[in-house]
Image 1: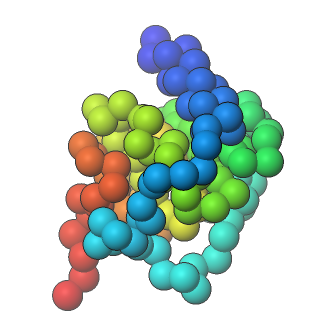
Image 2 (image 1 turned 90 degrees about the vertical axis):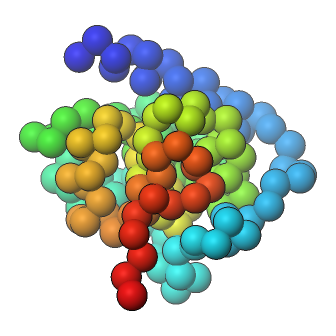
Length: 141
């Protein structure tokens, strides 16, 4: 896949930026009107990967962010976990808007839209297409 090197470089750069950034000035994810329940478990890279049948290849292993590359029959993607929601929001604010994300409590998955659509159910995430603070996943009800 020709976009893999670009995705890998982006994820590594974003991890470094998030790890070095200040922690001030960003509103909480809930302020956008969509948040994972506070009771939702905080999952690790390994737990998220296992839910979709992937053995993760760790790319970034820092206190603030952990990133792994995964490949399944659905396709290639990156799993990111964050120390807290604020760090996740900062990372998402720096992510290019043309890259869709699957988002959960203190995690994101970055990959092609068709892959994220396949992973949405098993990971119970919200799909963010153009505005990383607003879910495009229809809410039940």
